[in-house]
Length: 181
Image (tube, rainbow, N blue to C red):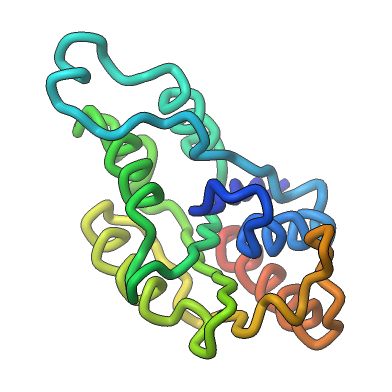
């Protein structure tokens, strides 16, 4: 069975991106496992040299390494990826010898939800350079950029818009098929 690990790039309790991932998980509960960047400290090479890679990072690295695919749910901050999300990936690529085990050839897809009108297009584009550097296998045939997210999710983070749910379902099934190859 195909295993996908989904990670939200937001730490906010009411994150639209985390809610989008939870909705995706409900659509494919036996396939999508959720990971978290919560608790990952700021990257500091001195800390790495003195203490090694933090346990929370090692745990997430193992989740990713065991998975067939990685689904990134990215917010968009100041027309790019969130610093906290990029920081997590920087830690996940340490030490450099682990990059091949964790990322090389890994199927990766990007989704995003935003209250703005462009639905994280710039953040998703910013991730492409990072994914190329890590030698992942990005799925570029589908894109899901949810704009006006505050109108599509209720106060409990439930996706109430059927059109968006249908788009998410088509996207996630397309990505799972890609990850199986």
